[in-house]
Length: 318
Length: 193
Image 1 (cartoon, rainbow over the protein chains, first blue to last red):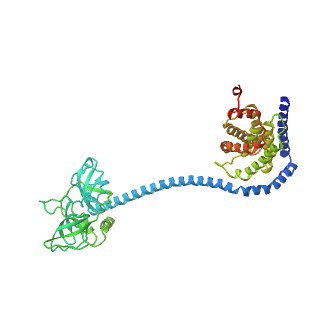
Image 2 (cartoon, rainbow over the protein chains, first blue to last red):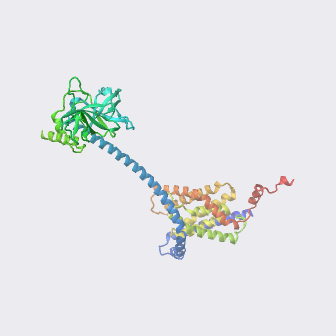
Image 3 (cartoon, rainbow over the protein chains, first blue to last red):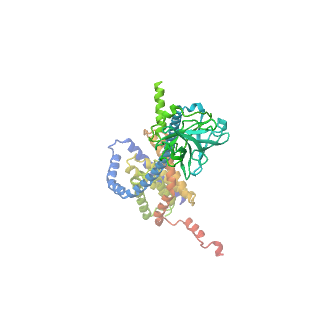
């Protein structure tokens, strides 16, 4: 019985393999119009309606799997695009930072040229910390005594005076801004030809007030105020003369002495690159620095730009 | 019907015939149009191997021949090529059942992977032997590997579906009946004593 089964099994296998080989040989040897090819075409013709029906019936299943595949593909593509977007965003941010720093450096350069700050041995520094509290008017910069900075060195940015160095370490310094309550700067209104003291306005840490003006001072709204420098040898000023501080925003008031509100030219809440003037000199504002100021009443941001333009034209003129 | 004892019942033949037709149509109308990792799954070796594992070498070989013939006719391929390859696949799966009768869950998976590998490589070798101008490239190798992997993934569900379809017509194998009796708490010689 077992032998019979084995013989049957082998016979079936042999027959099937032989049939396959015969089919293969005949099919491969005959012309495209041969008998087996014709059978194949006839079978295909007969089967095509079934295939069409099956294809239509199975379309939802196909679409389902295709949709899953496309969704997975789309998710992969989305992840790739997100990553690419992140890289591009980072690149754009870096470009913006570089551009901003470049513009800031250019403006500082113009400030140096306009107000002849080179003679004060300016040292550039980046602001690395600032109190989020409006009432702490100090910033940290990334330069210290190792870079030649000293206590009470004046600090400017591209728009004008911002403060002085009040704490010093070898690598980091603290700058107290002119809006701090402890700050006082001898100031000069070139349009009115009057001197005063710039201090923080009580109750408004973002504003300044110019005090100790004569009662009859002809200070006008929109006048620019600059550092006065050392007026009296007995009372030397820390700040070089002629550096823009702010713009008068109110009319004088008072009887014996008067004061006016001054808006700082520098945006003290968005400081980026600053310069520390490490060499102190004395004197009064130079005529060139005064001339560099825009007309009274113009936009504050025009102050340095006007000076820069003048410098450029001066340089172009040789 | 035991594959090594008697002729298959008409019901089993009918079910296998339906299975062959349906599997080939599903393959050509749906599965082949859904590529996974760029390559569609190939149901044919899985179905043939499943039939071989469930019914035996003779039925497996016949099923392989029929599926191959149907595939070649439907897809207008070289007639006899798929038949030859799948006949060997079905016979091999059937012999595995007859000689080892493996019962593990992984058997269907491994048998499906082996069947797919044999079918893919055998088909490629046969095509090359017949002088088909196909480049032996990394792409071909990659396609074979991907088909084996994809078929391995779907081998278990395909085997389950085929078994469920053929189960009502499968002969009651004495060895399986004995195994069932032990595993389901049936009487044993010890309990009888």
